[in-house]
Image (cartoon, rainbow, N blue to C red; front, side, top):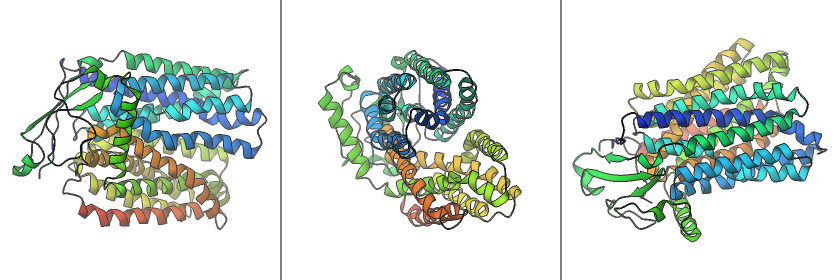
Length: 466
């Protein structure tokens, strides 16, 4: 069966490009503001009088909340629409960072982290929105550019945050600045022309397409960035709600009954949980832990193995981060080189990442570490984009928020497990964490070699329509 091709049309030429560029700006400003705060959190919580144990528990609060809220908020964005969900996440995150600027005790600090942990999913919703706006063939290119813009913000943010901390009350100034950035982002999102967006999906398939759609044109309307299924459905598909040919405000609004929102969110999460996408989520988990193990004790390993000063190690990390940001622009050309064969690209990028982690663990000199860091930043960037794109291909863009949120929850599990595994591995050797990362990456490669033949030729087996 040929790959389904989607075309996105707008009532005014060029409107889609302007919206996409605005989303790039939102992504840049989001991580720019967040990265101003992240390096300062541990110092601030200790300044409030927390012991190392209490500081660790407080620091894990955000990750635990993200673990449970990522999928729920992503699914909620599928139900009420991207505009309302994105505005809600941005504004409540701004409240959280504003409260952080007022935190003068451990209790206030924890309270400030709760809204951020629950609703800091603006980047995930932006990715879901981009998947709504572009065709399947354009998606890797656009996602790569979005990741690059966000990464640049993450690189520049600590510079500004560090400058502000040199002044009196620097942490509080950084917190209020971050809150102001999120409010500005909300204003930008509010001004986007949501109601003038029209998506029309044209499907081009082979002779057996009729088993998926009654004709060759399946239409969808998008208002507020929310997907509403038309009356064309796949025979035998499971439907979480009633399909309507028209577009009604009550189907899209944030103010629809709470019970209906909860029911729709639960149905979407259940559909993803009961789908056959466990292999992709497991690959995501294995590679997330492997990559985190690579970075987990990087500074300490450089000092113990090569007597490298922290300043030089910082330059090396900055170099790798910059390359990772720039690598986002390579995703599109590499995808075209592979003719959008994302399973093959994911397999090859995973194999390359595994090899590079091994070379880093066995590196006899700093120059080999520099070489592996160069290609490692590129391979991991491409790999992350491939996993996300395959999740959307196999799960369907009508559940893009749920799928991206579920992927973020899986990555959050990796963030919880990686420090524990890293600590255990370091008991044996400074090279223990990356060595364990090699084992996990090899497991991911073996899983891909086993599962890819079971996918259809293009890796686009669709989950039942929600």
